[in-house]
Image (cartoon, rainbow, N blue to C red; front, side):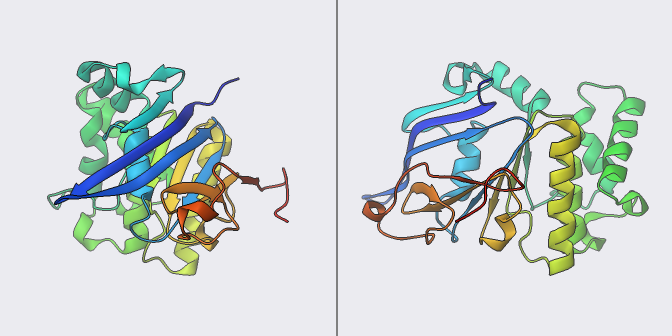
Length: 249
């Protein structure tokens, strides 16, 4: 069976005035259904850009990004919108722009496709799934960082996606909160056979993933490599497998 998400030879640059900044260089990555894949690297290493490309929120300058065998570049805007609504969920830490109740925030993306009663039932179920049923009527401003991370995941899984893209879910969390978030992501992968691609700022936050990559100098490399050496010193596409499949040596 092919990868659910596949990036092949992806490159991406930005312009800062007259200077071209190459963020990603020839990145190749496969993400399978039923696996948690983590990419770690320092701030500014291109992790968020990688996730945006995976959702076609940005387009690569070179290479291809495919979801379930379909090149995202071939989709019309309406087809892309439908894919984001039904199959791919982007989990961000910023939360709602207004101070919504959490039940309203999680239900919001469901209202277009479901009746109000069904949308709110699904939202409540998602909030309960992340262990925050007591916070269902609280507002974003009253939540701690750990609760915000979990509500962000609830917002993503309420639509029952096949791919969950999670940007820095453990930032600013203490050890127990980090464990709670990562354990939740693992259980979603195991129970629902979804694919999770997670970007994190350090190696410890990635250690329990099925696949671990480092991102530095614009290239993906083995998790044991430092996050930002010169590009010539990285080997592209090396990966280790954990959780009983292979041991890191």
